[in-house]
Every structure is written in C-alpha cells, then in structure tokens.
Image (cartoon, rainbow, N blue to C red; front, side):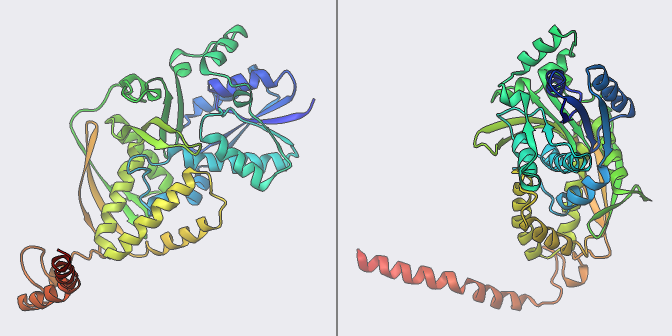
Length: 398
C-alpha cells in the first residue's frame, strides 16, 4: 500500500481520519510539538496512534523554530487580532505545515492528510503552503472531503470500539506555546459564553502575585530578575496566568472564507507578555515609531491569520519590526489577580519620559510658556484658514 503522512493530534477529527485511512494506506502519523503538550500526553498520542493502526508515529519538537520564526515578531508587533486574540492557532499552523512538508520530502512521501473541515481557516493555511512549495504532493482531507460532522466522527469511532471523552467530542481544543483555543459548543452561537469547565483550570488562585518581565531589544530576557530562554518565560508566565484564570475570552472574527466565526481562547501568558511589551514601547519609542508600527503590525497579523506567511512582504515587515526594537529594553512589573492583571510600571535606561524635558501637566522643561503661545498659533493656522474661507463662501451662497 502507498505511504501517507497524517498530521495527528490525537483528537476526534484526526482519530477519525486515521481509522479511515488505515483501510487504504500505510499511515504514518506525525505530531509537531509547538508547545502545550505534557510528556504523558505525547506518549498517549503515540500509543493511541499505533493502537489504531498507524505504521509509525513521528514527534518533532518545533518550539524553538516556532518562537524564532513567528512568535518573536508577534511580540515585536504587539499583535492581537481585532485587539483581542493573540493568533494562537494561526501562527502555529504555519510551522506545522512547514515541518510536515519537510518530513514528507525527506522520506519521499507523496501523500499528506489532515483533519481540517471544509468550513474553517486551517485547511487554507495547510494547503496553501503545500501547494506553494510542493504542488506535486497530493492532499487528502477525509473530514472535509466527506463533509463529516463531529457527531458523525464520534459515532463512527464508537462503532469501531473507540470511545472519545464527552468534552473532547463537544469541543475542539488546541493547546500550544502561544495559547489554547476552544471551538465548538457555545462558540457556534452568537450569544452564549463558554462555561468554566471548557477551560484548562477550574480551581483558581485567590489573592495576588507580582511578577517582573524583562526585555532586551524587544525580546524576552528575564523573569523576576533571572535570565531565561524566551520559550521558558512564555511557559512560566502562561502557567501562572492559567492558575489565576487570566486571558480567557471569545474572539469574533472574519474567516478566510468570508464568514464570521467565534473561537474561545485561554492565552494569559501571551496577552500579559504582549501588553507588558507594549507598555515598555510607549516609554521607549517615539510617537511616529509607535504610529507606524501599529499599522504595519496589524497588517502582519492579518497576513499570518490568512496563511500568507510565504509572501515576500512578510520578510520586509519583519525587518522593520526588528529595527524598531533596538531601544526596547527594560523591565515591567505586573500584578496577577483572579481573572485579571495590572501593569504597574516600567524601568528602562531608555525611558523617554525624562523629567529634564518637562513634567506633563506640571512644569515646562526645554521651553518657556510664551513659546507655547507661538506654537499654538502656527499649529492652528491651517484650520484657521480653512474655516475662515469656508465660512465666507457659505455666506456668499446664501
């Protein structure tokens, strides 16, 4: 039988695909670890895959590649889709597709399968990368191709003696380094919130906890004064925030296919890091740097969301974002509370909020009060001319 490489998470959709595909192919399952997996979960996925008929299971650790190729730039850009969602899945799928394709080419496998539906964004993110870089590889998507619902998949697996946990069959959960997403259930409506049981931690911490995050030229550098690898900092801040129930929400957005969609998420670590980085930038970048960055960063986030990572403009934007970070160094103190957090303030040698140049609302620095009067006359001149001319013209028309 022909070899086929199946992107496998161990969840409902990919388990359905595996059970269907083993009838016709020698199935090799592959899991790309971009964070979120416990060691016990990795072993469970492997065991489940083999027990369901896979010839071999491959696990590839891609957390470092994920951080260096995408997450780092999402932090530089303070990227939150619709000012809400930190692109937890969108960014991850790009790395998944690239790593799966790399393995398929290495082993000369000409068939790739995934568990995407025909109604979501992930099929576009996967298939566009496969189509762009390896157009001769055939893509098989059993869920999409046969229009299989979660109910259909659950029923089929049950008939084959495979029982899926009720919550897994109700929700589609994706855990990763840059947050967890929750689809299905209440997210399919416009008015219902997700219940607490849909999230990772039901028993939450009370009280408060202070943490300090350090950045060096825009990159994660320290946590509570201790130098750490950026990935370790993300994981530790995510763990702490999860215990407090921080970063939970529902994102409403426009899909690549043109429909509206809701997705639940729990991404306290990414959101805290992004907000802390943004606050540090407010102190260390100029007004026009911040303005330009905001426009370009929104565009970068849109490209990542739409699966356009291979467009050359991505590298152009990344070069700009990296250049903007040369002075973004310092530390931010944050207090964690139950389901919320506060940014207390920053410390930085590059802080542009310098007393020697004046205190806002308190005292002048490098200027006299009379200078401001002249400045106001000049800056108001354009509007003065406009309203004077327009007012006269309106009187003439009457």
